[in-house]
Length: 296
Image 1 (cartoon, helix red, strand yellow):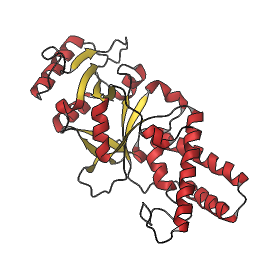
Image 2 (cartoon, one colour):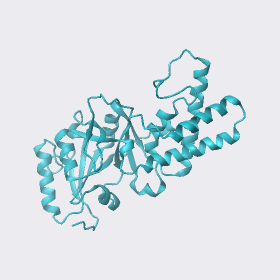
Image 3 (cartoon, one colour):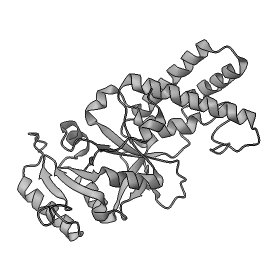
Image 4 (cartoon, one colour):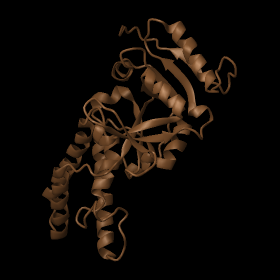
């Protein structure tokens, strides 16, 4: 049985790669942080819709089997909540891949010119995420996703019944975000929806840092220019990690691989990030993509 607690505790691989543009690489190294985008402003909003569909399916299944009035009341309220598609909670995500040289990733995130895949130590990302949220693998298998949704719903109902038996107890989320009939369903959905993706994306082998709900007033919560609107995001700090947690930089397909490698080496050295060519055991490795793809 796939349970969210087990998923949250999975050990990340030694290196996880963040695909980005030239501007993105300069920003990460220069500002010593990496951006996590608000879930409602990701490139593909269908990601969130996919999780909603799974929860709606589970609610319908439980409704057919429900017999007692209290359960029916809870399920009816939850269905109504899901149909509203509320976007009131600021949860942000930052994406990584187990593979540092994937054609679809270069096309999606490399930009018009050569992009980069920054390889971060999985242990460093786990430490970074621990301050703000969780580092979690994305689930693509539909059976696992449905199992997780079922166990998640079991947890929600258990919390509701526990709350009903102790009405004087405080809920773990503020009353303006949840009601007695829906429990923590909405906050949980915003938290865990980002790790449920359609199986067609399985090639990405993605992990994500998923933040806890953030207030707009948080010093690290800010906005950037988007194609059609301002995009809210959260700045995850890398400052406490040796060499910003970077272990490798993969240069995307480019007509000038040698010159690009030289400039990356220079950028890293300027920012006091050691290279394996100088310190093999602890330095950062710079290598070029092996994919024969032209975007120039």
